Image 1 (spheres, rainbow, N blue to C red):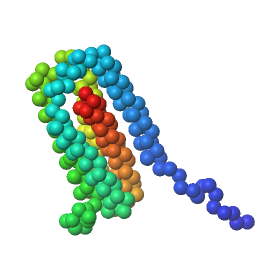
Image 2: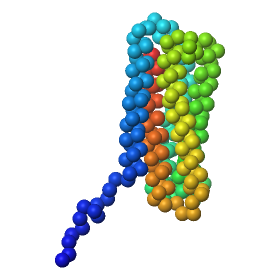
Image 3: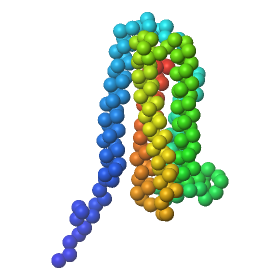
Image 4: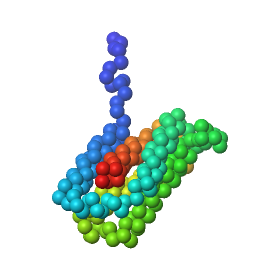
Length: 204
């Protein structure tokens, strides 16, 4: 007797992608805790916040934010290339780039963002704003610092994906899946930074 295809023939969610999404859910809770700490300290020290936020270089932070946000677009172009199984460029035009070229550009933009954050830290420290100087310093470095560590982790992940593309003989579904889950993480840290930027630099 012949039977129609059963549920076993249905496509099941990729376990790596599902696991990544679940893990990012825990990261949402982590950053929610950091936001809660920031708002709590700000509510207890409004005068301190008013005076401390005046020294923030908002134009510089805005440019740095735009650099990070633009990296999400380059990252996604890399994902599109990975989905069509194109790991390398077929020409010099961006429309002919593969995943490797787009991810290299994303890495460069992310590295520039981290470098800008380090420069901002050095400037604030020179002006007396340190982690232990006040509640504002603790809140600022705690929230932005953990985010910076997450961005650095993303940069390492990009190097891993790029290196893997060079290591394998044939770029296949497994490598494409790795690129996609790394993009999930990168988009996540970008969205978190937008929230931090609005809270720290815009709302102050």
